[in-house]
Length: 306
Image (cartoon, rainbow, N blue to C red; front, side):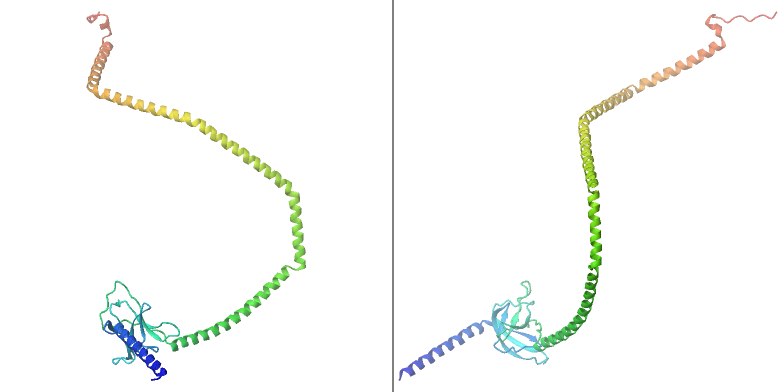
């Protein structure tokens, strides 16, 4: 056997071993350790058996079959298998995706929610339709048509704006003409003359205003000092007044206590005074009727009739 034959046989053997290893690894990865699922789309977009299945962007399996669904041929049934333990849940969404622009289509599944219930094998994963190339082209054509109309409208508006801008520029030219410039110069000269004439008066008014401000500051400081000086005597007088009021309050309480203690004696005294007043009234009446009783004990004898 020649050397070329030996080399060729060696290469073929190595290629066979490599192919067997790849097939074995793929079978080990997607064979007994995979679980089947399915989903349904109306647009498969070139998805074929053997395409990658991505869960959150990570390859977890491959597509096994892509065919029209018999109960509803308008929908495409996609059967796929993923690694056992892949956390597909009720919130996971299957849609048509691409690994990159240069690669073929893939089935992309979102991670869903950690709180959602996990899907058992042979379950149907909720799907979301992706826009087809025809739809995208139609939308781009509609946008292009709208852009043409918008450009034409903008051109019309720009012409109007240009006309208005020309009018504004013409007005500005008229305002900044030679006659108006001379008028503005005359006004500025008058203002300069007014400032030169009234400048000393303004300075005097400013000095007087400053002097008044200083005087007001001094007056405020004097008032503040007076209030500060009077504050302590007023506080002292208020403290003495408060103490006097407290003593008067205590004296009133003592007098009330004395009155309550001698309430019965006062009633007796008042009664004695009333009795004495009555006796005095009787004595007064007796003296009015018999004034001689103060001199004689017995009344005088009645005069005889002559």
